[in-house]
Image (tube, rainbow, N blue to C red):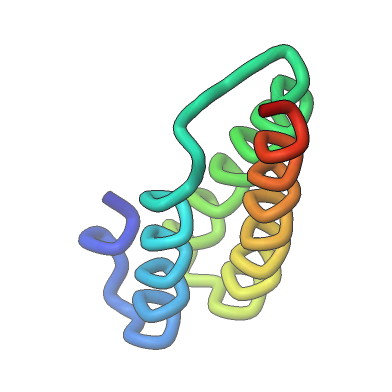
Length: 81
C-alpha cells in the first residue's frame, strides 16, 4: 500500500525492493521469531509515517534497517528448522 500511496520515485524504488524482500520472506512464525517480528512491525509503522510525510532521508534509513531486520528474522527461521 505504501508504494501506491507514495509520490516520490526514489522512495517508491526503495519500497518496491523492501516489498519484494518481505514477499519472499519465510512465512513461518514461532516463539523464536516473535521479538524480531515485533521490531519489524514497529519499523513498518515508522516507515509509514516517514512516507506519509514525504521524508526521503528517513524513509531510506528505515528501509535499510527493515532490510537488515527481515534478513535477521529469516536467519532465525533457518536456524530453528
